[in-house]
Image (cartoon, rainbow, N blue to C red; front, side):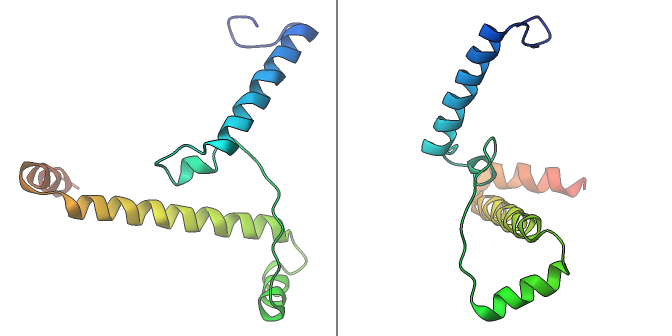
Length: 110
């Protein structure tokens, strides 16, 4: 690889792909413990979901012939975002003493 990180020959490409495969396997086996969003970062996957008839019809109507997978992926991202926000709010609520005071002071500026 050159200084900018570009692969220059086939051997380097093969090595880079091996590293990427290894990192991908690590991401699946150990999905960034302690983080919600980190657990899905850096990998793409295929999942099979069985929807009940009503939900399936709602999904078809919602996409109106568009990309159902994209809609489901967006819903999952929004769910994970909400979980991350909820986790942060719970952590903020758990602060006591000097930590709570510093956090309140920081938030007062906003």
